[in-house]
Length: 141
Image (cartoon, rainbow, N blue to C red; front, side, top):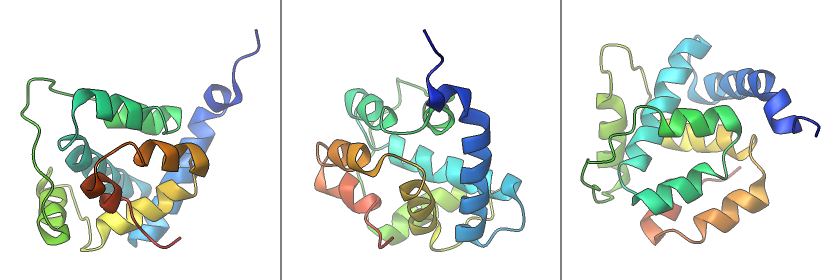
């Protein structure tokens, strides 16, 4: 069996994603973009049930999927979605000494992700989630 393309090209695709995220976020480096992307994914994951989170992860490319589930404490309580301002503050509070996420970090990461996923699959998965979860990723591309 041939190695699926999404796995064979995972490193290259992830680097391309980080470059797009860097540009969308207005970060100076992909390292800073990585910190912001990680925070945006973590804030979202903390607001999903395990089954919803696993379904969402399945719509991400392999290394974003790995980042989404990395260091997951399955015993954490599921948090409620708040308004965009409170979610952004949560994003900015993660690893605060290393996180330079701008005020539009969620939308900026959503724009980058939208260009690096199978949009149909991503949107089908989002449609299975709550309205608040869908709104988290709702952006103009």
